[in-house]
Image (cartoon, rainbow, N blue to C red; front, side, top):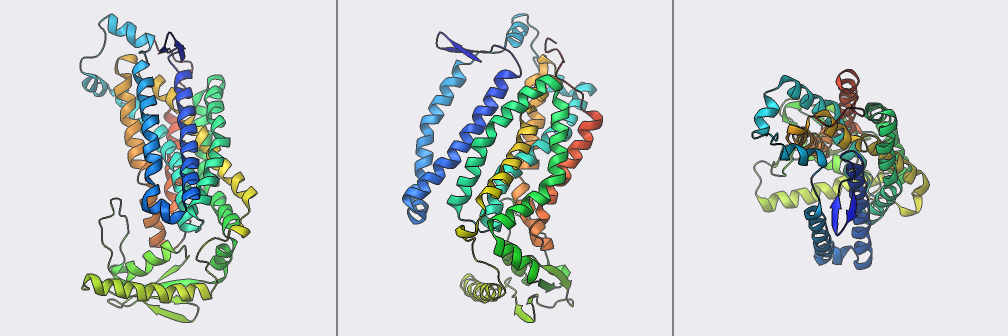
Length: 412
């Protein structure tokens, strides 16, 4: 994309402008992460939580104005302009998209063989990693944001490199390699993050086994994407607390109807049934249960937060850089791949469907699905099976069904 006479023009239809936009969007994300961290540092956690969180949003108004100006200055691609001038534009793009079996086939390939894997890797490498650092490893929010922000700034050029490389060797090899590497290395990479960021937590997981004893019929799968579900059984209360406290535990069945309890070594902490409690009673009982369980976990070595003096920053940044590199491998070729899969007449409609469904559903549900999986099994890494399985599935679909598109003509 070039700017002439105050107006932005596309020099090529694909992939250069799209890759540039991808690179800029990643840079904006990394800078915004660091900007939020800077505001939190300057104001302090109390002031930031009270009113300071509004400052980044107010500043974003300026960026919104700039982005609107750029968008309004963009011209359509030469291919689309020519098609429109010749009167060949689709009058019913949705109908034209789904009336062809070939188009539907490519939509499904794009959804399951490209976007599904890309979305879970993208969300895992940025959003879930931040969740894992702050909620599971108990790293303070400012430190976690700065670490991820640095990794994004350093790793963003790799996205542009992967887009450039896909012009040379093809889109497919880079995509499938990214899917495969993510599926293979997510477990060891996140395990290394635990050791580097919170070594005392890693030691406690290895040395202090915890068991939840409960009637399996009273245990729910705690998938709560909109935050409205209430989990009030003794089993759910026990597992929810342990999952949030980053405690690895195993499950053991109790007799039918028995109230769940937590076994820490030879100590027993009883949970409670909350379904019949009023709000005040529930609050008091929860505080009592939380205090007792926190004390017992502290006694066996579970830290309440990560110690900044014990963090291995070099190893942490190296791991985070690897996670960003995996994002780059599936994100760099993404736009060009989707554009080149479909004919000009239906391109926008056809590529929008798999892109938004894939990112909205497969990627958007990752944090809540991962937490529910952790709470159900007691393994703080078990939630990673969600992106691992989807990435592996996309690898298989892409290997067998995704055509190489880099040499495909767009003039159709």
